[in-house]
Structure formats: structure tokens, C-alpha cells
Image: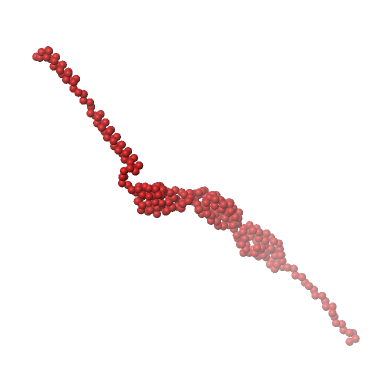
Length: 285
């Protein structure tokens, strides 16, 4: 057995050795720190690269060229011009424009004369024509007023005439397109203008009785009126003529006069006066 004093010495040395060993901290924290430093350096390098490009520092390897003018060109021609110059075509969405015809480029970005990277995109604003406008309601108006309203809205007017039983002469019967239709000026807009009542030919009623003639003229759309009687070789009570005469074209509602026979004219007998010159014989002969 070890003496007690020796055992105590052994224990003391073991304790001393345990407390005198250096502290070894965990290595995990130092690994995270190294990774963070690397990421920070990469971020700084990227930022420096972007700043250099923004201020034109360093050789980026991209050639900048002048942007050509394509405003005023048809879209397809503008495409060819930009592609030939080394640019790509960006946005070409159509937009309404009152100053440029449909399918014509009216704006570009970048604008002409500016410098841009070869291979970069150029956005084009292309006209879809004038904006649509609601067609005014001109039915029932006079032709003059209708033209004024349509001209004021930017539309061309195509007018034609047509007879109408319901619309006063000179007023608009109908329009095409109808009111409130969205239409791109200048249109055109067609209006139909009333020429008044439709025309009809005066029917032939000569030889008819006055009653029959009045019925026929009325059904034809005219206003029959008895113009009185006149002597005629035609049977008494029959129509001998009309004014206007049969076959004349008149608007409906016009007045047609008819004359009725009062029978043959009276004949007057004339008596020849006696011959007052007589020859008397001399009694002496």
C-alpha cells in the first residue's frame, strides 16, 4: 500500500495538472466568422463592379452606339431599322393617338441620338389610330343640325334621302351607326333624311261615279275634292277629268280635284225669220 503522505502528493499533482491545462474554445464560432468575412468581401467586390460600370470605369466589353430615329415609321420598318443597327425590340404596345395614323411609331425610348449598349432593347409606342368617340344622337334633327353635331365630334357625314310618312321633310329618319356607338373618327356616319311623304301616281277615275272616284283617290293616299259639275257628253254623274290628271306623281296627302258630268249640253233651236221679200203679181197682168 502507498503511504498516506504519498497518496496525498499524487492527488495534489493530479489536481494541479487538471487546472493548469490551457482552455480550448469551440471552433464552431470561428468557422461562421470566416464565412461571414468571405461573403462581405464578395458583396464589396460586386458593389465595386457595379459602381465601375455606372461611372464608365474599366472595360466592360460592351459597345455603345447611337440610337437611330424611328418615330414616324411604320412598325415593321422601325423593327428592321433597329435590328440592322444592332438593337433589340422592346415593348410595342399600341396606343390611341390623334396625330399619327394607325401602326405608325410616335415615340421611342431611348430617344434618337442617345447612346445605348449594342444589343439593348428599344421600346416603341405605336399608334392604334384616333381614340374612339361616342356617335351623337341626331335622329329627328334637321339635316343641318345633324351635320353640325357630327362634324363637331370629328365624323364625316354621308347623307341620302328617303320618303317617310312619319318624319317631316328635311329631318333625319335614321343614322348608321346608331347613337352612342363607339367609333373611331372620321367614321363616316350615314344619315337618312326625309324627303317628305312618299309619291304616288294619281289613279285614273274618269268614267267612275263621284262616289267611286272619291273612294279610289282616298285609298291611294290623296285628298279627293269635288271640283263641281260640267256639261259633257259623258253620262251625268260620272267623272270626266281630274286635276292633276291621271298618272301625275304626287306626295300622299295632296288634294286631287275631280269634275263630274252634268249631262249633255243643252241644244238651242234657232228659227229662221221669214223672208220678207215677196213677189206680188200685178193684177193687171
